[in-house]
Image (cartoon, rainbow, N blue to C red; front, side):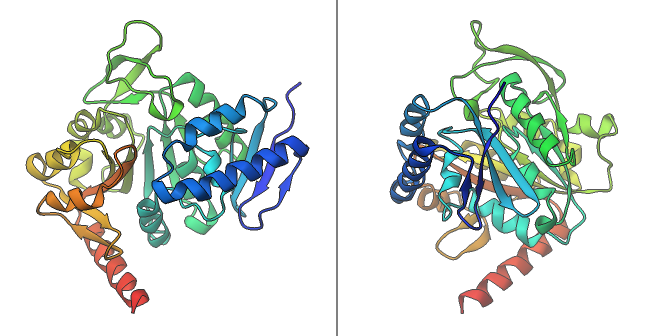
Amino acid sequence: MAMPPIQFDRATGVLEGANAWERLAALALASGSKVASAFSHRGYNGCANLLRKTLPERDIAIKLNPDATFEFPYGDGYWSKLLNRSFCYENELELLFQDSADVDYTLIDCGANFGYWSVLISSAPYGSHKAIAIEPSSQNFAILTNNARINGGRFEVMKCAIGASRGTARLSGTKHEAFSIAGGARDGGEDVPVIALDNLLDDGKISVGGKYLIKLDVEGVEIEAIKGGARLLQGDSVLLCEEHGNDPNHTVSRYILEHTPLKLIVYDPRSHRLETVTELSILDRIKVSSHVGYNVFGTASAFWQDRIRVLNANASRRMQ
């Protein structure tokens, strides 16, 4: 019988259900994140995963807020940063999601992994929004499904990848946060179904007149996914897309700027604002770490562009 998950409350820092060694590991994982944050957590994942091998196999359930619980294998290198209560995961997305709590939108969570954002966005402090969590990996999907279950089944899960059109592809990789259909691997991995974003409209999963935030974390097939969402992106949608830190050509942003009708927007940590990009050179300054991803936004929606203007105005007032 599996051991019950360790419990951790990010608001209070209380850790429950852990033995002495697991408590010591929690201290190491949290302290390591605080130290590694000074250099964008380089090396943290690997060290945490080594520590994980010394721990019993069990999960940890982290209370993100009073209405959101996120569960994953204890010691996981990617997600254990959440034990550091000062750690903010993808703060540029956090900024937009918090500001949009009062908007009636649906999150389309592509490459959902274990469902962190779907758990949060569907919680009361973030507006109890509808979310569709899309994840191709069988391994990840099992954990994603569990996170939907422990949060009352309040968001939908779909097991597939996102691409330019319907079909199948080979999913492969060694890290759960970086599984991809881009490699075309023959050995290892698994065959997975692929759908296009516009197929969500075709299949009645979403409606043409709705408002959508589309998180696109698809590890190398971003451009194909954008091509497959042309109709959806014409409406009141914002594309939240990862720009890889190790790509000096800014390939995804360049495609959005030069080949789509979308306005390209990026969070500038210098101004603490979401800035409209007309020259890609701004990304040379923002993308300071080659081993991390940076989220850029694309939208053709007047509604969302106005919301972003208001968000920026509020940010400017807070800085004064």
